[in-house]
Image (cartoon, rainbow, N blue to C red; front, top):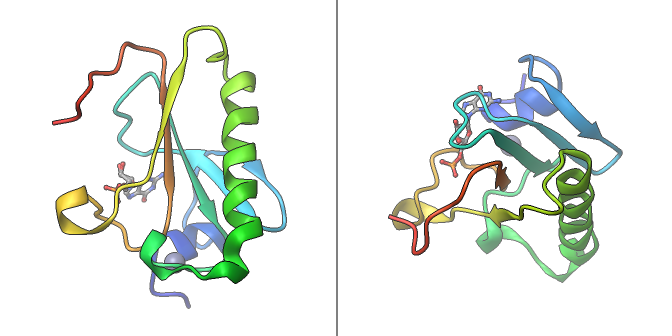
Length: 114
Ligand code: 5GP
Ligand code: ZN
């Protein structure tokens, strides 16, 4: 059994509300949404963060962003806008050690973040 929470979600050992899935990527609703739309987009292969990738991961990293844009469209954020963010490490606010992108939208998001 995988130890990482998101690896367990990818393996369907833990249920999630999946919004998109293909060979490389899973996208699911955040359990504690910070905005009306809050989807997490993760590579199926475990990487801890953006500091744990190599040039071999270039294709999947690009793919994650293409999926994010497509999901933003499908979730009705095209006109209003949205934010894609990956928290990295302690000061970045990362709490789950499996690389993920937050797709946030459906309200006006503040900048700079707190
Ligand atoms: P981070 O803080 O690492 O950038 O983001 C982790 C995100 O995962 C948080 O927004 C948190 O709400 C979400 N999360 C934590 N546990 C679960 C879970 O079991 N299921 C889902 N769907 N999201 C989770
Ligand atoms: Zn993992």
